[in-house]
Image (cartoon, rainbow, N blue to C red; front, side, top):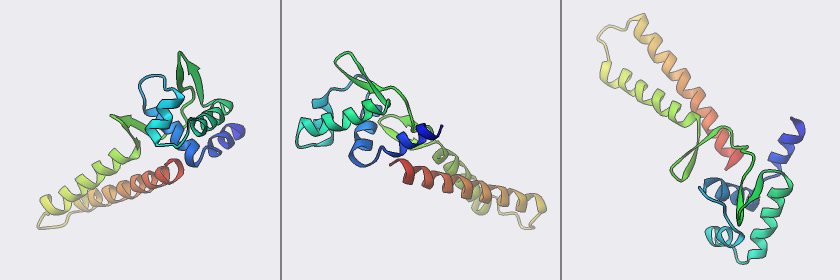
Length: 140
């Protein structure tokens, strides 16, 4: 697993952008498509980054282009054309339920059950938000 992690960590900057571009496509992507899609000045720049990904075993040739062979954005889910951290919907759920508890339910007498609900939602929101921010910093 150590070698796997170092290969993933070496994918940064433009190479990571190329990887993410290929990952988001639903078909094999050619060098020119990568160049155009990312606004690169030359096809040789796109080719260089594609070769780095091929060497690292993250993409493979398929047909007339390249597709992702190994997904290392494990904590992400692709929705439409966007990759979002898996914890983001959980953070949205906890924040929504916390808002409902605090601003809609608001009992006149604070019960231990109500306080427990607020505490659980607050801890869940903090954990999910922390993980979401960490995933964004590491992979985007």
